[in-house]
Length: 63
Image 1 (cartoon, rainbow, N blue to C red):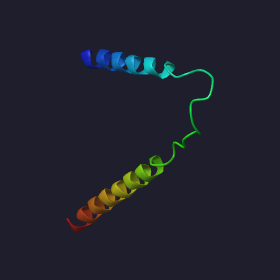
Image 2: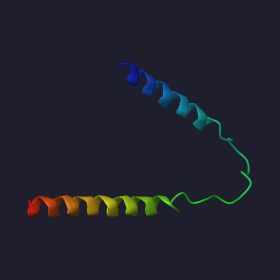
Image 3: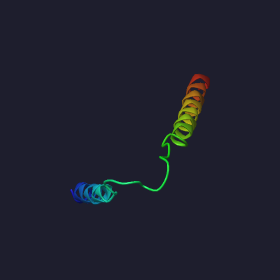
């Protein structure tokens, strides 16, 4: 029960900071694309998961 309360508290604390962004006006520069590294991280995670699944399949087949 304490873990659930702590998780809800931390989630509520992190969402408060989302409203601290400026509402209007020029933010000072061109917009920055958010997909720069996220797609690489997803691809690396998929490759690692595929390798682990293949290794587990190969070990199961040998045993």
